[in-house]
Amino acid sequence: MSLEILEAKEAIREVIDGFSNLECDVAAQEKYFTKDTHIMVHMNGKLAMDIHGSAEMVKQFSAFTAGVKASHHMNGQQVITVDGDKAENVHYCRAALLTTQNGKDVIVDNYIRYVDQLVKQDGVWRIAERDQYFLMTESRPLLG
Image (cartoon, rainbow, N blue to C red; front, side, top):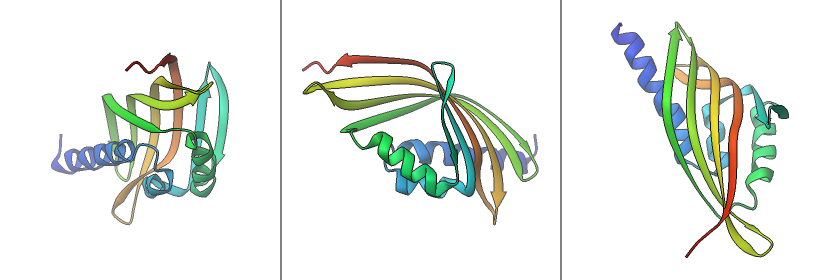
């Protein structure tokens, strides 16, 4: 594997981890996407969101996360394939969100598979297309 490929893979890991580290700060996450990004969110095996453009992503994801009091993202397995200034990244993430339901704090645990198509623009890797699959979701009361 060439040094160029290794550097690209590390830069792509930083995009994915940078996005996750911002947790629910959707406006700050926008920088990791192309302006014309396409995001498809699948829940229960069905397309739940079909988003075109980073501005629309900010609008829809901000509405989705508006009731989140705290969050934690943990990225797992990741496979990156680089082809010049294009790449595919497949990774798994566990996203835990603290919300309120019926006046009680609830943890919503999401197990997600992301399939991203990235492009290198002006020397920076960005997500051009994201297929996001919620594989399992579990809700439980916050104990404590």
